Amino acid sequence: MAIYLGIDGGGSGCRAVVAGPDGLVLGRGAGASANIVTDPEGARSNVLAAAAAALAEAGFAGGEGEAIAVLGLAGANVSDAAAHLAAGLPFARARVVSDALISVRGALGAGDGVAAAIGTGSAFAAQRDGDVRFIGGWGFVLGDQAGGARLGRSLLEMALLAHDGLRPGSPLLTAVVEEAGGPEGLVSYAQRARPVDFAHYARRIVETDDSAAAEILAIADVDVVAGVDRLLRDGIVPVCFLGGLGPVFATRLAGRYGGLIREAQGTALDGALALARGLA
Image 1 (cartoon, rainbow, N blue to C red):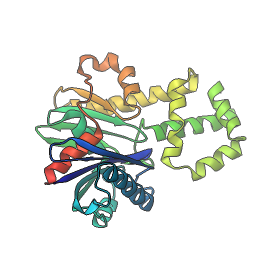
Image 2 (cartoon, rainbow, N blue to C red; image 1 turned 30 degrees about the horizontal axis):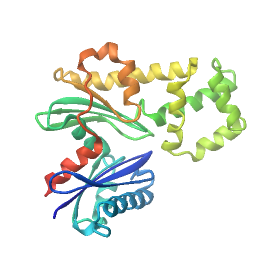
Image 3 (cartoon, helix red, strand yellow; image 1 turned 30 degrees about the vertical axis):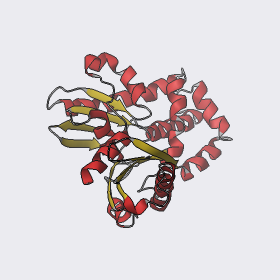
Image 4 (spheres, rainbow, N blue to C red; image 1 turned 180 degrees about the horizontal axis):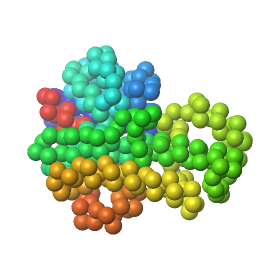
């Protein structure tokens, strides 16, 4: 029996799912962060752990060599890390793609549409007649605008500026500095922080009624609109907002996109499984 394995891995963790030929899900697994650019060895270990757990739950413990796998991983679009990882995987067949690609396939199925995937990072994609075009998704250092990591970094930067009297303060900014043990502690934290660490602050930003949080989100709104509007220039199609922060921006931008906003047809794992079945 053919075994299909789909993996969705990003800065906040990875998930795996195993299905049989009929598409019925037989097992699931989970692991820690899987960004193959910022932590390639850790990502590989976490991916394999999640896959092993899913295979075991499905009754195929140790069956990696029989699985046809698609791995949608953060960072797969920006370096040769994807090829390096794929070459060392134990699966019967494997393809490593961007986590944004499996999100788009899961959300839109085979239909046309635009997807704004906003989690720890961000990427935007349009699918038309089966072809997918991406913009953004270039990683935390130079891209991922509106993603949780960039939101969190902006909050910490604002907190230090407010501490130095270079911008207006707010209760949230004061709290961030105090919780770190002062500005020196905040800087020390930031110097060793990974994108997922910065992203931990994103939930406070979206849930706190605070002037600084509102400012950060207003800037993020502009970044999201820029990505979505660019992809809608080629024709008006449905828009799906995906990822941990997707629903936040869907609500914030409902007035702009109105009836275009659609619920996703499926998850990123559904997309990974669909692509895996295409490898058979």
